[in-house]
Image 1 (cartoon, rainbow, N blue to C red):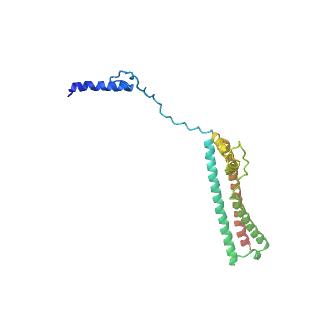
Image 2: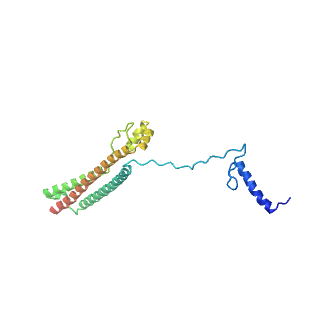
Image 3: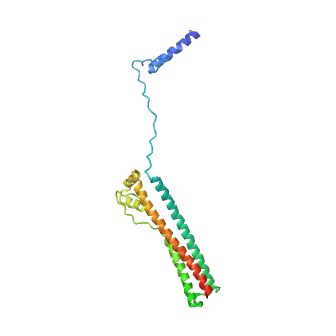
Length: 221
């Protein structure tokens, strides 16, 4: 049986109202329709998931990490400087030995006593400078004194904690309060940087002394 357009227009809102009533939602036109008997209640609205806030950094942690990174970079630069100076002393000593072997320069035996003493002083200064520069690049880390409850500050502490079976707890402690370990690492790293710079300065001074003494001895001879 055919339906007129007027009847179809009237039937559509009625069907929408019946469907909304069965689902427990609002009917067409904004009127609230109670859910039908036996129908499941509507699901409660669930709030959207909120991201967990990241833990706030400890006061002084960012500055400490920045300084630690700068000092570790300075250790690398100091080692590079010492290596270059060692190579420079080696080149100078090799050139001097080659000239002496070829007879282009007189040896200390052919020099007067004061000039020979000055010559040997220059050689000793170069030897001391070489030793100082090699000592500057020697790894220098303190012996680990870690025990449970103390912070981790360098690889020696990590190894000692792992051997004692307390590495996991030490890592949790460092996560809760990273500042003690950071302070200890800063202290150790600053000591290493200061020692390297000291021995590099000694090496440079000794090399300069030898570079002045040997030519002066040859000129005096």
